[in-house]
Length: 149
Image 1 (spheres, helix red, strand yellow):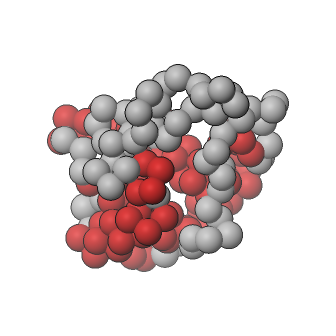
Image 2: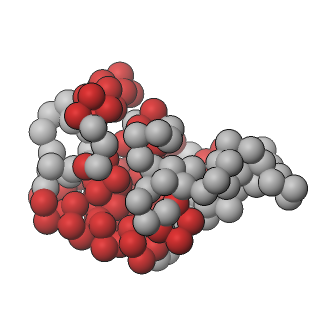
């Protein structure tokens, strides 16, 4: 299991990048930056869409474990639960993978992308995803980020 201080240290390094700066209270993701969102969409299309869907729709029956005990890939649109998690947690899930964060033998097909994507690219993918949500969902997600600080 990844230690919380490792995640925080990585996020601090990531936040030091000027291109990733966002407004206070809006979380860590540059979801209002057209450049970052466009880059994130390209990365999403090449790295994430195969499982999570080209339209962020996820896989069918994403809440029901398969015969091997794995959950299908959830949607990242407003119908899913992605927006229920603060930015730091989403970042850690993408970077380290769910199994590494949950531990205790939890099974997931979502491995970490820390060896494939840079911290900036991970942030851009998440920024793209967040940019597609309706404004009320974004506002709720920003409140979740504020509570997580």
